Amino acid sequence: MLPAGPGASGWGVGRTGGLEALAQRTQIGPAVVTAQAQELQKDQRRQKRVSRRRMPVMGCDVEETTEGVQRETPKLQPVIEGSGPLVVMVHGFPESWYSWRHQLGALARAGYRVVAPDQRGYGRTEAPESIDSYSILHLVGDLVGLCDALGERHAVVVGHDWGSMVAWTAAQLRPDRFRAVVGMSVPFLPRLPVRPTDMMKAMFGDRFFYILYFQEPGKAEAELDGDARTFLRAMLYTASGSVPDDHYRNLDIPKTAGFMDQMIVPDALPAWLSEEDLDVYVGEFERTGFRGGLNWYRNFDRNWELTAAFADRRITVPALFVGGLRDAVVTGPELAEPSPTVQVMPSFCDDFRGSALLEGVGHWNQQEAPEETNAALLDFLSGLDDPSQAE
Image 1 (tube, rainbow, N blue to C red):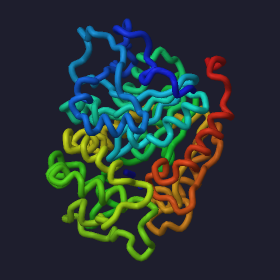
Image 2: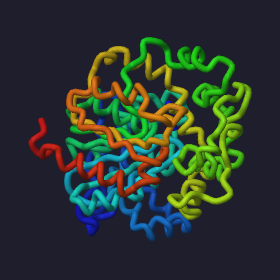
Image 3: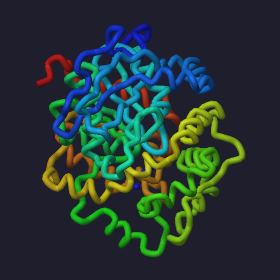
Image 4: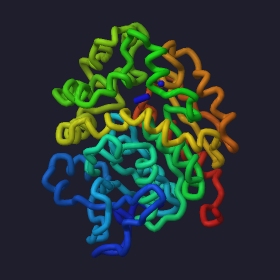
């Protein structure tokens, strides 16, 4: 949270028995794709839900030898569907590949190879211990390594929430690999002139701000890990467009408060989120905890330091923004109109194709409004050049 044919192989990685040299080293670091079928088989309830939705998470071919791979390089766990030009879909917090359940099949049927990984620190992907291992360069490097492992030179990268920041940065730093970008909920923002947490402290003073609350290791984990179901139920509802105008959360609370103090726990889930959907998220976070995702937030200042050399780099590839008009990240807390950040975003892009702003939709647009989100994605993808002609 932040201000191709369906008959193809489920993983789409290749022949049975192991690929050669999957762990390709990038300029940032290697990323290795791996199947963890045995773990998924142990979790029968989750596997049944996944298979009912025809989201196979089985049978990836991987390099069996990992000598020389850095110890804290995670093995990525993706879900893959379809065949055709590659589209990589990158989730945010607190989510997983499952956030793209409505997009995988739709894009695959339209002729694309769609890949939705659990990102570093989430779900079935490994979670390094070191906080420093969750920098934006690590996260972009994971996507480059994923594309290498899939034998793909070019991809369209689509991100939501924190995944948008990864997607924007991937397109900004590696336009040679990511030929187009879609950001959802979080617009592109150039590097700030001041350290991010210093700016946040100046803006919020004695008031609570969740990113500052997340900075201290262990503090947020102690609150959120204790009752993952209640937290996820509240988080997914509170940031959605389903909250009535007269029931919007109180943002003016002291900085001594906890995260749940600004959340609303609904009696019933909104129509776009079933109890079965919630069970998928809960099952993963009860197993892993929230540390991996929280460590992304603990790299805000480090990311700022690491990207100083790229401060003036623009988005040069085709770009699209998708967001909900009941998302405070898109509109500001008044939920009135697109924020100044959204309005000026095109000025930082050389080929901005537009903003799809969805009425009545909150932060989780690809889940709350899948048909509208898919229509915007497919329209954008259909207007791109043939990837085989990309340099």
